[in-house]
Length: 214
Length: 214
Image (cartoon, rainbow over all chains, first blue to last red):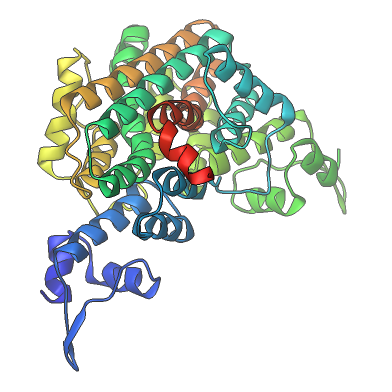
């Protein structure tokens, strides 16, 4: 198929497809004439994947490149693929500001209290610690119960992630889901949480809401 | 205090503080001499909040501005503050690509199956639907069990959010936590999920991991 059909099939503008190619995210098509390049099903899937990582997952071009490279590495061990992708996608948007030791320790102690086995360089420690510091900026000192609920939610999702992996047998498919599922599980959770919040908020503030509408 | 101390106290570079001011995110200090402006504790807190929304929460400047404006509106009803902030922060990074009706329906049917009350324009529907489409791009048709686990995780977090709000009595503090907690709950969950995943992954692939290291 031509690039216009590739773009259409992947529900992505042609300009975006060309941009992915220029950035080295999308492998070349086959040149069948000086002016003509043919694309296949693999390109359609790859364009959809790139779009999902960039737009829904919110990854940078550089992080997307790392993830794609990890996925394409032939015969790479699963754990290695996952580790490359995991650190690529966990890179905070502004690496120069680091969370304090106290916030990092607080995150680790919750994880330890749940019996989780993890290494000290797990990128989630920094991410969660920075979120705690943001809450602290509005004087919200997250209570232990709140953090334990969030950790329980995280454990539920991580168990669902792992269960989905065990249902697969092809190592390439497993690697792909490990990486892409890690990226997209966050916006999936965020969307569902927004809906659950509307439900919970209406239950909490029925009077306020009515007053606004009167 | 001077701007240099404000920056130090908020652990933010002076250039960033000036940038926040230029963008209208940070209110002015008090000019005490032609060349001197004084800042107070309120500025320190505000700078830390802006940084958290922008960097940890990943909001755009425009969305951060909307959130701050909603927080600063004097006497605004809670539900209104929340609704302004919620739509500001849920704006997907690339609004031109919309999820298909089928994906949106799938999300709604999970939410309905859990008995959640929500409106059809809840921005979480679009966010979760786009995540499902991204998973679909790697041929992962998320099984019902997987989605239900994620929804249960979301409900746990939303309940924790609401419980934290009920512990407060000052309406301004409630509005602040509603908005900032909505933004920062996502990276808090994401960080904790990364840690829980390391634990779960090691349990799943102990052999692979050992093989890599040999």
